[in-house]
Image (cartoon, rainbow, N blue to C red; front, side):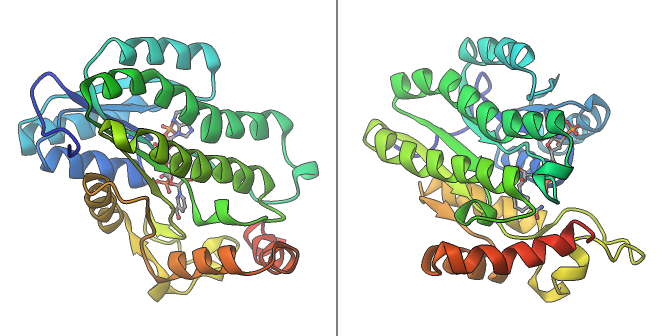
Length: 268
Ligand SMILES: NC(=O)c1ccc[n+]([C@@H]2O[C@H](COP(=O)([O-])OP(=O)(O)OC[C@H]3O[C@@H](n4cnc5c(N)ncnc54)[C@H](OP(=O)(O)O)[C@@H]3O)[C@@H](O)[C@H]2O)c1
């Protein structure tokens, strides 16, 4: 059975619904008729988006201001979602840090792991039983091409995305016969905002313009892939190249090469 058709009582949950890819995913789902629950910490941008989605697409749009790196706050959200009719879950919220782990704030690194890995696990487990019971549902997990390989100067992020990538593709094999779709979105660079011409210390310095994809395209191909129950969607040329390199290059050769690239991303 396909991802459930929209209905007035069902909700599609999008984490990271306050900016970037999450805004585009929520908009794409609403365009297809799904009512949504937006989740992130900043409620202001989500309230604005919710109002736009209601007006443009005539769907219901709810907002939950939750710090998903906080276990107690997460538990409360999981409890709510387990008791609602959730047709689609987009586990999309995530953060990244660049630089040597030893130089980074340990508390922020822990919070990053909570968000990028544990929140994905908790939210999925909260909604999976009802999806399996109905024999229908969709889970989209935003991992990353960075999760395919070891990346010095991006260690916590790369490892947390390795969890997201592997969890998604493993879970898919378990629930496919039960009618639940699970798709991994594993992008390389996605343009989430216009580049600052002054900003030469970040990813802008490393990735040429033609290799970027935008959030709208990423969301559209991701929801298409979820509807088809595709295992993995990799939008854009660079993402595809990074994926292939991650799969076929020996890790001991790959690590120092990408490590040098990510050193630049850290501004070193
Ligand atoms: N853009 C890319 O090039 C790229 C490439 C590969 C993978 N990805 C992945 O795509 C996903 C979306 O990234 P993006 O590029 O769209 O980044 P973004 O614009 O920075 O969005 C990140 C989202 O996560 C939310 N978030 C951050 N910390 C949170 C927390 N503790 N609790 C709840 N929500 C939190 C943010 O909202 P608040 O700050 O309001 O909480 C925001 O809505 C991430 O998982 C990222 O790793 C992005």
